[in-house]
Image (cartoon, rainbow, N blue to C red):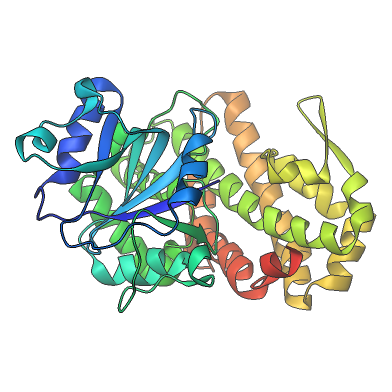
Length: 375
């Protein structure tokens, strides 16, 4: 997937994101214009590379466009780039202010990653970018000579618009409520910590915070169906298990190519281990693969004892608990407070270490460098 970064300047328009979001809500897509800076005295030296990227962009091969003013950062799903203005989906201020636009990025979806927090923008998101046309170095906030749009890669790669429902859109719920932000901060302060929560997939954060809000609102209602909370916990762990498994299995199959022939089934469809990089399996698949003799030997031979013990002592047991609660609630068509509380305690860490954060720590600390070693 291609990723670009653009700095947007509030000098041209104060509420630039809000204005584009309004058009997006009304029209289903919006054109974002890359304005030619009056201060820029040189052309983008990588125009040819950008042109090649633009040619390949489509609905099915979208690019991620990160938009930041350093205090905030957003990511847009871009499905086309054009030199021609599309009046119906273009905010009026471009014409009203006679702005010179180099290219129009047609945006189909938009997500807010950070709001009004320079340190988080710099240390979590911009620090995750490398600049392939500038020696592959980490993005430099200070003293750089970048010309935008800037081609960037991600150290920890995330597709912010990966969703099983192709019709799903994030932008209608882009701005979170005060209660959402309060609960999220409580989880940071008392459970997850500032560093690790931002290493989770954005969907995981949204699901876990929404589950906590719903649990707190209904924990005293003995008649409440906690099934949606169980589903949110399940989706969270499936997403984070997938991030973990992709890195680990990619590393192992590069060291031992014979592992690539290991097959598994998901809903009667056959897959081999390399398919896992592109297709998320179900919960049961992880236990099946971890217990495979050849995979188990590879884990023992190539990964640390800490990772091995985590997988075979804690992770498989947790997956079985999660499967049991989820399957029971599905068959009963409802879930009770005790089932939701069992998962909540294990996942966010009530009177025990958070399984969610422990999994993330293993992925980013113990498996650090694995992606680079495998590539």
